[in-house]
Amino acid sequence: MTPPGSTPPPPGPAPEPGARPAARQTRKQVLLRLDPQVYDALARWAGEELRSANAQIEFLLRRALAESGRLPSSPGPIPRRGRPPKPTD
Image (cartoon, rainbow, N blue to C red):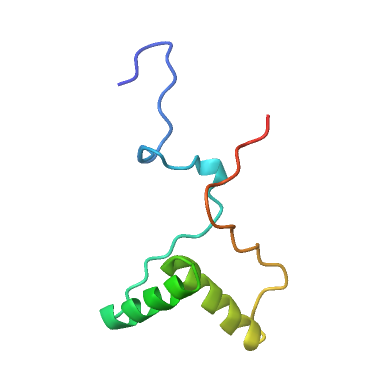
């Protein structure tokens, strides 16, 4: 129960320590199950191209969509690697 005169916490689970604020989270999260050998091959390929496995999956999906003519006309850019920029005040 919330004490009188205080603001109740927002609904939903508490954010994990170090997690980005929800306002910046505009990307869709998807659970993907892969054969372990397929994942290992994908992770090796991603490492050779200096990408994470997640970034490699998105890169390959975008390329496959573009080749088949199914890529949306204005998808957001693939996020830059590394630490996100500091917010401007």
